[in-house]
Image 1 (spheres, rainbow, N blue to C red):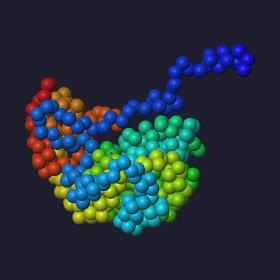
Image 2 (cartoon, rainbow, N blue to C red):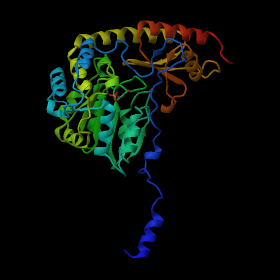
Image 3 (cartoon, rainbow, N blue to C red):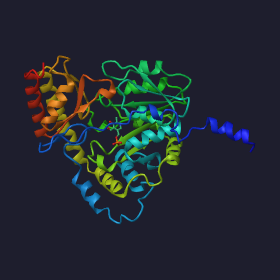
Length: 379
Ligand SMILES: Cc1ncc(COP(=O)(O)O)c(C=O)c1O
């Protein structure tokens, strides 16, 4: 190569490896806090985990997963069969992932790239932005109404460059949902080449006749997938297992880009047992129903504004009055071992998100908030 060409190339090359465009724009996901002051009994209400823990059958299966020197079944065959049996789905149309987070990332990488737009709602789950930027695509955010996704606003934001729409239904961190008719209206309004990702991480908790997680839409449309997780109702967040139901071509694309052994053997064993233990799921739903209603009533009675939730968490809005703000409440509760989730990164600095906890945790939380609101902290 002539020396001039070398120097020209050298002049434009960076002096060190540089991430692709978009990566530096990602604010790394900050997980819910897990530790409080030393010596204080901790109630972790920051990550929407199951206060009842996993099914004892899932725990037994986890412990029986031996032979750690062998790779797991990279096709998650037994788990997909168990999910298929539980929901009446063809296992060939299922993919398992390292949590549904991994599946969100894989979908973005497989279906969007530089110049493409990926659409989601104003308070949509933070990983949608991270996945979009990771793929090199452009995030487009549609406004919400009453902390709820707005189908008209989403459809109005669709352009010729839109490739995907992420919809958490119900949504985190708001706890609100779209009735199935609205989800169907969204799908009908999207161009056929736009992939609609229905993220139903909290579906099992929803007790509304007009709600559906999306199985029917996936079964009848070429451009819809549904994601589910073992991290919430099944209480297996530590093991990182999620799954996707989708059209054959989309399943095929995700299988091409995923890690060959993405779900661990203990994760496969525990999740397979968990999905068969419907009694444990029923107990988790009943516990949630009771305490979601109780907390909503109690917190409202304390004068706090609570966004109506169909999930296992609540978005609670605090006054702006000095001494009573969300930031001060968070610090006050933290000192008492009650760990909630700040939601500033969602553009909600005046609110905190709290997971429905054990009976003890829920009572402790209400008592602490009563004390907090009764006193005039730092004003
Ligand atoms: C809406 C939503 N989707 C997906 C996830 C990811 O779940 P996981 O990766 O644990 O399966 C979460 C977790 O908080 C969530 O809230």
